[in-house]
Image (cartoon, rainbow, N blue to C red; front, top):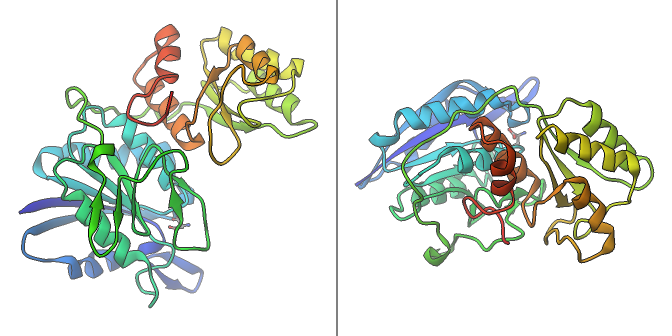
Length: 331
Ligand code: ASP
C-alpha cells in the first residue's frame, strides 16, 4: 500500500473554459482525480486556496508548497505536485535544493491541455506521476511529462505546442513509460544526509541576463553594477564566451566584490560552459564570474535561491555553486 499526497497548485491541467479564457476551477481536479483510486494506492489531495496560472508564480508559492509538503512529510510515502507548466522547472529546481535530505519521491506534473479536453495529455502525466511517487527508491524531485520522468533540477520546458513539453537536455531521463515502466534506477540519486528542509528567502533579488550582440553586454553590466542584485546568472554565448566589454566586466567585478555571485551559463540549449576553451571566455572568469557548467538557467537560479536562503556566503558559496549538490550539473 502506498500513501501519496497530491498538492494541487494550479496550471492548465485543472482549468476549464470561462468567459475570460482558460482558468483554474476550484474543486474540478480533485473530483477528476478520483478516477485514479485503486487498491494499493491511497491518496489525499490538498488544493491550494489560490489556484494560479504558474506564470504568476512568486517565491511565496514555493514556501506554500514547501510548508504543505514538509508538515506532512512523515505521513506519506511520496508526493505529487500538480503545477502549471510555464514555471514548473523553476519550482522543481527550488524543491530539489530546498528539500535537503529528501528520501522520498516528489514528482511534479501538469499538462499542455486541460483534463476537460478530450485529447488531454493530463491523464497519462498524472498516471505516470502517481506511479513514480510510489517508488520507494526515488529519493529526488522529478518531473513526469509525456512519458518521461526527468530530474527536476535538469528539466526545462522546451515546447509549447507538442505534448513533449519537457526534457532535460544535459541528462538522461530517470524513467521512460511505455507498456512497461522502464525505471533507470542506476541514474537515481541516493539519499544525502539528514532531513533538513529549508524555507526560501522571499525577497532575494536575482536576475538572469542574456548577452546579445551590440548593446546587450553593456546593459547587462549596468544591471550587475547598479541593480542591487543578490546574485545573477549570465547567459553567455557558446561554451561561455562574451565580448571583453569593460562595462560588463566592471559589473561582474562589482558584484563579486560585494560577495554576490555571478554564474556564467551558455545560452545554447544544451552543452556546458568551459572556461579556457576559447580565449573569449577568460575575461568573465577573471572578473569573478563562476562557470556554471551545464546548469540550466532554472536550476542555476534555484541553486542561488536555496544557497542564499540558507545563509551560505563567501568562499563556501562560491565553492558550492560550482560543484553538484543534487545531480544538477556535470563537472
Ligand atoms: N499557463 C499555464 C501555467 O503555467 C500553462 C500550463 O500549465 O501548461 O499555469
